[in-house]
Image (cartoon, rainbow, N blue to C red; front, side, top):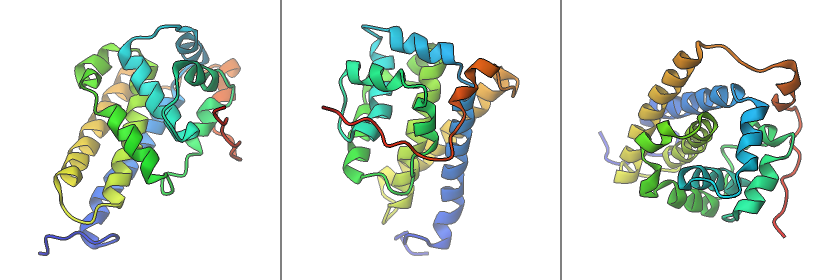
Amino acid sequence: MSATLQKGSLDSIPLKEKALASIVKAQEGLSHLKKSEIEELCSFHNPSNVVKLVLEAVCTLFFQARPDWSSVRSLLSRHDFLSFLYDVDKDNINPEVLSIIDEILSYPSLSEEKLKLASRPTLSFYCWIKALVDYNKICHSTNKSDKFEESKSSVENHVHIFEEIIIKEGGKNHKTDKESEFEPKESFIPPLQKN
């Protein structure tokens, strides 16, 4: 067997499918978020480092650069914020933006233990953004390097974390009618631009 993994080769199909499953499970985790939980995150003027880093990583997708906390709060406060997340084109994320996000996610303060102690929305956002990064690493990997193996391991670990979240939630969606405005929308509204 060749040491090189060609994009689209049969060797990559099962792992790519796992990465896609990880994204789907992460989106399911996002669908369990309540409007009040996101409003609480918006209310933080000085959040914990874990919350700040995770939300900076998520919002980097929309600002195309690492945002400051006030910009993060502004984006979070939009009624269609989760729609933005559902509408991200996972196959066309700027590699430079992915690099910034990956750098943010590599901070030691984002350990699995600290994430599990953080708020449920923070963990859900982390799992979603990490799933996107891992998916892109796998899809754009040209060989079975350490980064590829790290992404493979991460995808498998996050599928397990999502299953734990869903088991804790009892597989139920806890949204109320008032919170249904966070449902995915059919059309994508262009993200806010940082001034």
